[in-house]
Image (cartoon, rainbow, N blue to C red; front, side, top):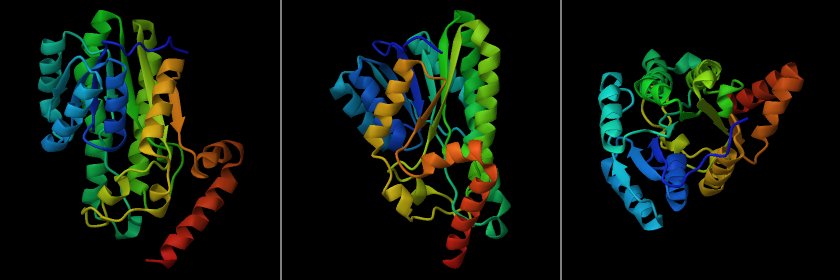
Length: 275
């Protein structure tokens, strides 16, 4: 759908860049000559990633600490980037947090955090960047969603709701800005070997600290980054990435929704037995 994205010397802003998929993308893009703005809350980890990106060939790397749940600060952050770099060629909304708890056990505050970080944070930052892209008549907006944004999974009611919302927002945005010369890409990872499950919120809003078996056995994060980079090169508006059985559920949901519901209900039964 889109022309090949040109990474060399492009200005790319990545949130959630201190670890996981964000870090892996930053390093891959640095190796392709991109100028990078790296954002997250953990400054020490951002500095570590930035140093690695410099070593890999990025002509300019900027650390910009950011908490996407503080929506009122995001416009100023965008202005800081635009003043320093002049333009943003690609914004990757990658910051996010997951959940591991049955709905009946979950405090409402967990749902609020899912929405504040995973949905409203992405929308607020996109709104801060969008006018400059429309004015230029070029720019690329991307978001890391999840296969949980395509079907509901047990112990992820808040996370799945947030990721469905993100998919809806960016799919709708794509229809609106194509005529302005802008591109929108949604990224839907499956099980990728990161700390996402360890950092996931439990029923009381505290991180579980537990590595899921399926995440632990998931796709290597650097391989994941390679697939995403290839998707940008191929001009895909949606990039599905993963190599486990979970990816087949995407097709099953399309072909036989009832079978998909039954499969996921059985998965919930197994988790319920271990409560």
